[in-house]
Image 1 (cartoon, rainbow, N blue to C red):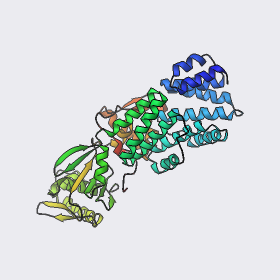
Image 2: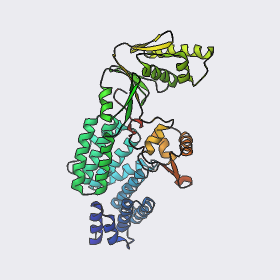
Image 3: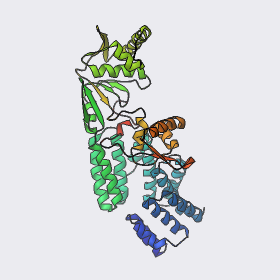
Image 4: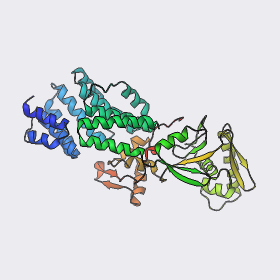
Length: 406
């Protein structure tokens, strides 16, 4: 490798893409194309970066497997940043295996962290934790140690292990300062901000207040009877009952939880559960059936007792009933949660992350666009959707990941 390529590579490792381009901007050999592609990616021109890296991979050819593998890893990182979740995970795994076989442990680890970040993004936390546990970050450069701690923090936040997440972010901050790469420090600061941003609303006895993530963690560790509107479950410290596929029953449970220790009138329950403003005898008959189903679902945790006006929730063990709700409630809150990261998403990537159909996502995006909450960019297959983060709120509890007891 000649001196200009070596100097450009060192500049990129230090987060200086302009310094790298000064050295290789006029060269079209394979190593120079690869370095130019990475530099353009660091400058934010992802489309140009992707084209340069593909040209570099072709220029390396089959005989230079190591250089080709590095290009594939760099292209995978661009795909992840641009939220193109359709890129081949098998190709990245094959590139990682090639890097390991050639003794390039640093780039192989970088490829592994890309795999971990993708798994975190789509909610496959168990697999991500397994991959991260197999890596020892100690011998890696500071930038890779930062990536490791950020991944550990992201997984801990999704699990609502906030003390663990905060410790990981402190370590990430130290590693980022050692790396002296401003973009890494900014990423750590952004992750830390999530811990100090309202994540949910607590509703109890007719009053509301906002909770931080560590307060949500503490609440879930209590013996309170919790109607969790973030995950559509009911829990009481010993047991968790999911009502995610029973929207009517969850609507009834939430209405009863918000009114506790009081009761809720039959007409109010009909309006909440069935969306009907004018209750008739058929609605009342259906309400009796659904209340009976709710009693059976919650029989080990609580009773739903009839009163003169309607029904009241009576927990079996807990002394307090609370409702945990999203900080901002919207019909398409899950889609907004992903778009709130500030990146541009395709409909196919959102569908993959949400585990739903692309058509369902498109309908949600159209509805959000009509109210000005999201904006499309580009046309056809290049179209992406984005929105600025909701100011003052974190949407971490809306993302697909297990919480304690799920």
